[in-house]
Length: 568
Ligand code: FES
Image (tube, rainbow, N blue to C red; front, side, top):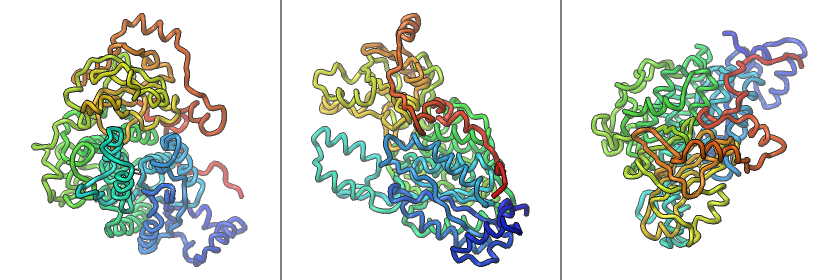
């Protein structure tokens, strides 16, 4: 084996002494430096990322496995993104974390890396960073929380939206909310629905970057630790076999991930993160691929927010391997995975144990799945809609725009009694895109006006250049590209303009003459705030539009694992 760690620990003379000696202050015996694979455990543990707060324990299980297989584990921290606490939005920092991960791996004497991922952005950021280094990599997800239990009902993160609408409609008190929030998050782990974290866990499993079964084992189930232990054992062999992310992440592997995500009703955020990962490994992937590849894939996992159940239920019903076995006629079964077997081999012995949770492909829960990518004069580079989370009657809809220039403008005016809006209106929100906010927050599934909620209206067409939480639902057009702050047509939509959404034809049109749109664009001046220093300035200058994955232009591709200079 030609291990890169030998460039540090295998040296004689002053440099070798320095590399080993300081490590030995941790109580490490000399034979750990004898040429065995050094495995980095990239840990996103943080008490400010509650979904990943159990990761130090998980890392211990990984270490047991690495030691057993004859490796040398070294755990290191990277910036951790807790979706619920980080302001202004965790997405602003996804690319920063990917840089932290990339540089931490390359700069240090590691031959392989285990990525501990959980809360939404912690998965794509770590995978993006590792792909740009391209050393043997294995991913472990932290696992979903146990299903929430509240007053006789099963609840999960999607209920946040229902609860908040119930409070706005006067059906729930603040004391009810205190009880509900404690019941909802009652165990370690990430969100228990098919939100972004679960979608990311399914993504890495269907890409072949994890051991089989990774996506659904609950965080609190002892088998999650077993998976971590076995992953620790396996990564040592992955290093010996020299299997790199670029060997696993082929175009076919990305297609498998898109098909699988559609079948489980995964998050719209999947689109933006998978595009960014593909950009790092140089696999051609286009936003329209998500529509084309998922168009005939039905929803076969009955999970919230598109269905009824939770990730814990999915695990007991057979987990993602059972879903992927059911999809075998539409997957590339010969894609290799990190355990050395193919996707087809990994799932061949899986079974569906509960057909109310995993359906057959011939008798699905919903023929609509995946994403629709609409284009038109309102989004020349595309926008995304999740039909399984939408109201079918609104998928063909023409209505009058009610425009909000910023999220603050929306908050200030949405509940005004005299706001000129009814259930046929289309709510348009600008300046929540990658550059405009900045960081593209999850605000796209805007709450409806109080006066319409009181009338029993529970969905309307909403359009923005922002994202939506993977736990959200509604007839929501997201990721409009180009965004308003980049001078897209969205920037010049006015109150009262007529907009047509036609999902059948994959169109989103502003029914305003092109000459009038051109005139408005000439008169338009950007209104978003430009930050004059630091990381946010870098972000606004280099972030790409949503249809390209919102990665930085200078981060596409990779720099490999070679260190630039080698002196002490
Ligand atoms: Fe962390 Fe949902 S908030 S996964």
